[in-house]
Length: 90
Length: 173
Image (cartoon, rainbow over all chains, first blue to last red; front, side, top):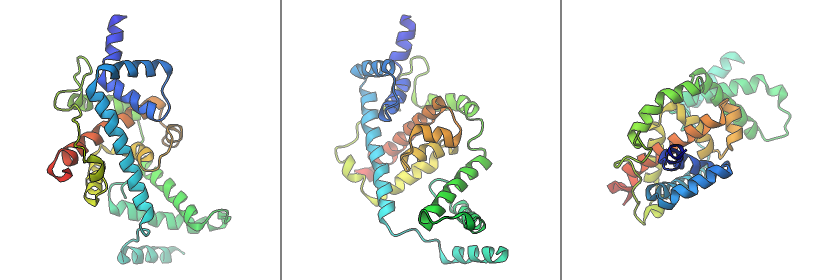
């Protein structure tokens, strides 16, 4: 029992995975307890979580940036090629 | 293009989308704009592309096989702790501001390209499309537990890649 406790509660790989479940609101009560306990003493995992949130924000920023730019236009040669292919069939 | 990794595949998928759209034009009811309709077709084409490339096949087997290779770079097998060299370092205070630069986005793209192909579709569904886990599991036909393993591996790799190539390199400072 103690072995199992140590194995699951002190495992950083497991803890960081649980933190990602928590981000999406998909964490169970027991998992939340385990994670909170782990984070009491684990600095690197707390750092991971903070940085993970920063990276998510970078994803949001990238999405907004792509949306705000004029639509991506394929190069003229590619557009011509696609047009030719379409003309062949239709 | 970020989702399929190279421009020629992306171009082919766009071409396929037009073919399908013209063939199916009678089913287009005009409930949504043409653009929305075409984007929906393109999304399906991307999923089909993943299927054809076997990127979504035998996920459980892939996860099992790649487990050791992933873990040994980041975690101590005996106790699950971060390896000394792989443990997250604190980033400089200027981290947030530096993330607005174009150069940062190039690093971000490079890190996505470096990720194992098998992780990209699921990671991108969350990262860029903000799709919830249930939807992604359904579309990609994977179990929730595989979903979390993929999201976790991708995030650990992404964080490490950005740390090495941006936040703690001279570029990010």
